[in-house]
Image 1 (cartoon, rainbow over the protein chains, first blue to last red):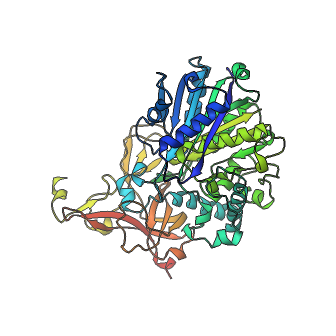
Image 2: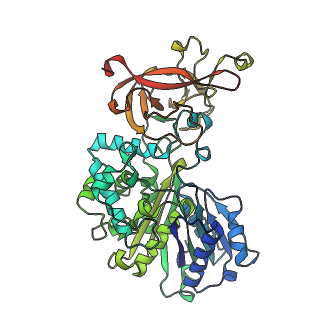
Image 3: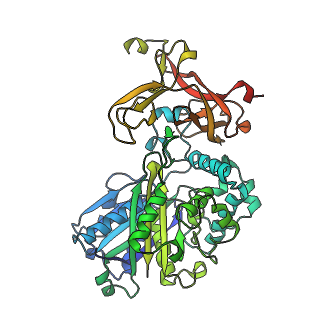
Length: 381
Length: 150
């Protein structure tokens, strides 16, 4: 299969921007990626927009003002994994030989507070109060604590690490360190998950430009190869993200993160031990512990030990969420995976400043969310 | 169906969720759909098995008694058109494992700070609100059984 490379990346800080429209956010990230790839907009042959909450045909509204060049464009949505599905579409299009230069843009501008439940839940679920998104993660956390002895302190340590990492990330919403006490004393949202252990929906944008690897040297001296990009949806009853009414108590399948990462490792020809840095879906701090296990960084049930032993610190064996993760960046849904890709590209180019994992040559980005949508992307120098 | 739409009747919050009739309410159970091919059970009336794709489903009443498999506590008023108590009162939400091999997501009635995994629970079908036609809209929740609430 033809290899595909990233030749340019751009980002608009994640946060709240009252004075900017989603057009502004998206255009800034797109222009930054074009400059990074030494390209002009007219060079791009196809564009995908990853978004969940923006209106219909947002991609044309955002990108046509850069020049109505007549190229095909489309919006793509797969909840928190939207960026992964958009990126894979672009890769497949290049591999099919349809295009050489493709932009994948992720943009979101979300209302404050809980997400609009009617986007995800049926009316009866909303009326009965079963539509608080963090409740699903919290129930997973409670069961994990029961089965494996994971503690509230271990969950808080993940939030501590990610907030601490974000201090050095100019693109994060909160660049602020919190103490373990502040985290554990912040209000409970859904037991056992506290406010400072949860990501906030917000606004932001990120963009990548792709081309066949054998043509990448025309545009950049530091192309990053996409070793794998695997979007997936879960097997029967294998995960419980929202929305949900019942699960099987009899049948067990591996969860979507396990399935996607295993396929991605196979495609890339490397395993978790060969990967130097990770950006993962820390929708809440517990989620990150479970993802350590599902990505194969440790055995099932041992995720709490990893955070205790500092394995996932920037200085550890498996650095996770060097950017500060979604807990400190916030989660502009359509942009989140591409924001992770931006971070990994910075790491692999050696341009991550104080967040730099020394000598990083490989990196993995992971997203997971509503409808059990998931994606794992592996990048290498 | 038509008679249930008249004023003052009990109506289900979702069609196909409960055994009928809805009176007497003590005898109402949750309805499950069991696949004839693979035996997997889903909540409510279903035409297709999400496990094997089978299209022959048996409607079965689900046991009213189960055990709490996991839970959380909803500490803030849920978003959207929540029909629970106003002003809001925190409540438990959990997966309740039933003998039919299904875990059902349900609000858990009672003191949310006394929940624990494995506790015995019992189904309660109850009127959640009165709709614009003055019908009682029937919802469900599980509550701790007597010996658990001491």
